[in-house]
Length: 173
Figure 1: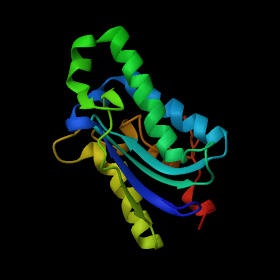
Figure 2 (figure 1 turned 120 degrees about the horizontal axis):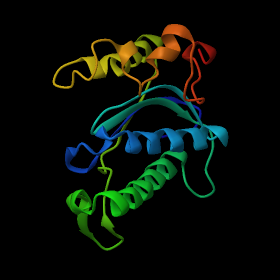
Figure 3 (figure 1 turned 135 degrees about the vertical axis):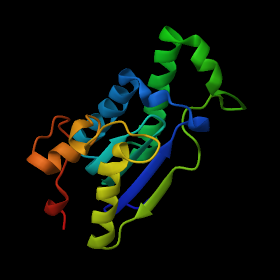
Figure 4 (figure 1 turned 180 degrees about the vertical axis):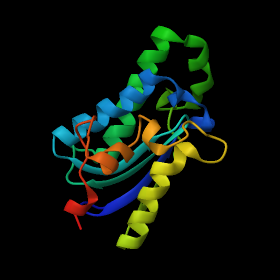
């Protein structure tokens, strides 16, 4: 991903396991995004946390030391997931075991998908998709996007940023 371009980014949990179903793991995601935002490394225009994946509409602003912000995000959240599972659910941790030379557990699939959003039309289509994701198909996590807490929908609906890291896309266009 290039800096100062808006991307629709999807990151999926290893083997599509529902790790993010528990609130504590969602809070790890929120905490990491908050940190990167507070350091002015990213801007987040929209997001949703689903049971086994996340969608972000974001912009990377600058490096986090020697790492890109998205690499820092994936690495930090992976470490936090590991710590949480070691302390609270060693049995579930076993499902994330991998046989790799540089690590023994993997939480994020390697095929994270960034798509640059070139036009306003596509950007708003993706924002709509992100916000409605919890209310569609097999998920049905809420009857209305407003009822799903781990999304930016409420910010766009009534201006409330309960996460402290959202930027309205209208400020960027």
